[in-house]
Image (cartoon, rainbow over all chains, first blue to last red; front, side):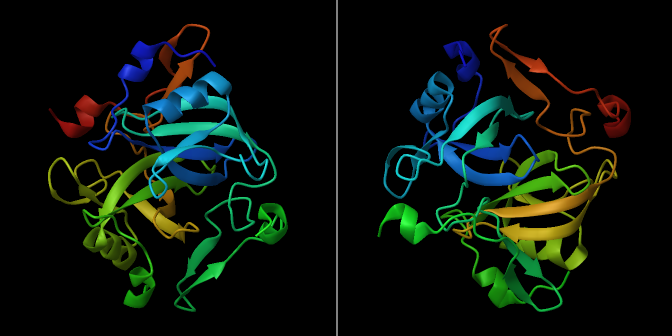
Length: 132
Length: 132
């Protein structure tokens, strides 16, 4: 996906140089994850068609799926009214979450029980894939 | 929706005391907006069943839809693997965006044209609703 730099210039990165990126399954609308991108991560995402993120904890660029092979192939790129959030619709290979779930949002609050409940089944075994 | 405080204690607010909140249409999976919540906004959201946000630009709590009547009624509350993002599935009254669109993500990048394109139709007239 070719993106001229003036298009990226219209996006608003925060004081740390980051923009939140929501990643949504293009097939069924499921929200897979939210990550952060710096300008380099965004440009690499657009140049390669694969989601790249900026890991705040590790302080570096990361290709999503680099160790697992669970890449996210970009099919649509949107921004919001304020141009300070990026939304990518993707084809997800296997699963997005490092805990083995297709979506990182596998915990739902159950008001009756007063607790978080896991509402998804694992799509892969993290211990096998990441070879701890 | 009743939420015990220890459940909220498990969520991770950032150094400014905020957590990103993605709001998704429960009916069709469309992502309506991303906003920020401080703990008070999150508690008011859960206590009332209507999305409340923390406006960083205005520095105050805001009931989404307060001036327009376009409330977002919470049907599901999720968090992600890191517990640092909130996801709400809602019933949206009329539209989420102050520019008149149902979703704030009405701008899509068109690689062929090299520009952002509006890919949605307005659901209401902002000038009439907000009485500028």
